[in-house]
Image (cartoon, rainbow, N blue to C red; front, top):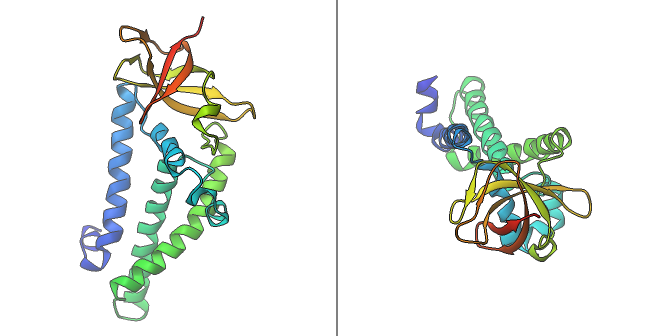
Length: 204
């Protein structure tokens, strides 16, 4: 198995699978410390604005149905596995190794097709994990509950809230006041969007 992963023909596919494994380990470790990496994926849609994520092609890819990081993990997994299978079949059936460009493009297309169907299933099984095309202004004044970790200024924690369309969202929040501290289970009000998190005040 090691020989297959270290083969030059499988370089990019091995890199993709190793990256997925490292993200999995980081998520396990971060959860122990009360932080989740998956919530970071929601910021991609905010940075994109009315760009690619608003196109019909993005809708066909189902890229808006789950946080971007989740989509990327699924895509890299199927890209890596598809590439290994393609190279394995070409070597055993055709007795040759496909050029890297061809195998990478084939694996990418197959990976995207499988990912599109897979994330659709994931989003139906995990309806609480949603990304949104709503703007930041729509979130101001929303009441969120701290779900993981403790939030202090400069050290955000994950929080969950539900929008007017009854769609849940996960965001990173930190106190608006310097000396404030939010604990898991507390409710806060979103008041201002920073680059990577929301500033919030305690819900009275």
